[in-house]
Image (cartoon, rainbow over all chains, first blue to last red):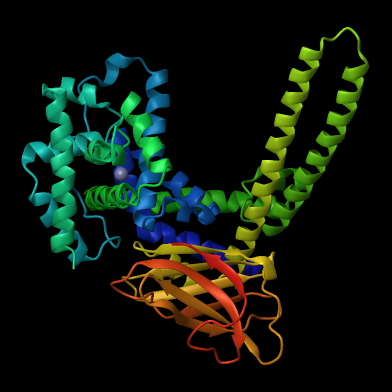
Length: 175
Length: 288
Ligand SMILES: [Zn+2]
C-alpha cells in the first residue's frame, strides 16, 4: 500500500511540474491576485489528481482540459469574492497587460511557445485585446462592449475573427 | 437557429460566453450530435488553451508544491489515524476507503428502499392524508432512492478508477499526463463485465500505452489483442498481451493509424501471438 501511494504521489509531482506555473498564471490573470491564484492552481492539481478518471470527458487534450478547469475555478472564486466585497473596489481593473516576469518553464517546448506566439502575432491588437478580455475575465459580451466602448456586434465579430486567426495560425506554425 | 448560424457562434461557446436563447440553441444542437460543430468547438478550445498556456507570469511552482505537500501530509496523517479522520480526508483515490464508502452507499440505498416500503404502507393506511400528498411523498422518496443509486454507481466507478490508477505504471502516468495526451476509456462487453481499460496516446511523446484491469485469465494457447479500428483500414493490430494473475496489465501499443479517423479501440481474445484481423470475442471496447 505504501509503494502504491508513492507511485500515486509521483503522478501528482509530474502534474505539478508540467502544469503548476501555467495554472497559476492563468488564475492570476483572472483573479489579479497572486496568493489566491496559487491556491486555485493547487486546488486544480489536487482535484485533477484525485479524479484523473474524469478527464476523457472533455474529449480534448489534457492541457486544454486543465485550462478549462482552472479558468472556471478562478471565475467561481472571483464571483464569490465579488459577492462578498462591494463592487466599488475593482471597477477599473482588468485582465489586461501584465508585467511579464520569468517565462513559464517546462510546459511547452520552446518551439511550441514560438508557434503560439507567432499565431498570436497574426491577430490585430484590438482583436487580441478583446479575446484576452473575454478569456481572462468573467465579463459578459455586453459588459465587454460597455468597457471597451465597442458596439456589441463588433465585440462578437472581433472575438470570432481573433479565434479563427489563432486557430489558423496554430495550424500553420505548429508542426 | 440552424447549423450555419450556430457555427458562427462556436467561438463564443468555446469561451463560455453565450447567453440566453443562443446558449440554449447551442446546447440543443450539440446534444443532438453535430460532428462538425463538435470538432470545431474542440479546435477553438485547444486554441484558447494554447493561448492561456503561453501567457507569461511569475513562476510560483515552489509555493504551489508546498500547498500540495501539506495536503499530502494531512492525508497521510488521516491514513494512519482514526477512521473518523480518514473519512474526512478527500479519499476518492484510496482503494480501501472507496470500498468502505461503496459498501456504505449500498447499505444506505438498501435502507432507503425499506423505508420507502414502510412509508408507502403506512401512508396507504392513513386516512387523513390525501392520496395526492402521499403520492408526492413517495415520489420524493423514489427520487431520493434514485439519487442514492446514482451515487452508488459513481462510487463503483470511482473504485474501478482507483484500482486502475493505483496499479498503473509510471509509464502510463507519463503518457496520460503529457500535455497533448488523449485518453480512450475501454468499457466492458459481455465476456468480461468486471473489466476496465484505458489507452493513453501522446503524439508528442510518440507513445501509446494500454492499461487494463479485471480481465479473466486467458485459456491456454490464447492471448488478448488490442486493436485500432480505423474508418478506412478497419481493425489494425495494436498490442498482444496476457494479463497478470490479478487480471491487470500495462503494455506499450503501436500508435493509432495516421491520416485516418479512428472509430474505436477494442480488445479481443485471440490465438497466442496474435492475429492480423480479429477472430475472437471482444472483451473491451471504447470510442475516442
Ligand atoms: Zn452544427
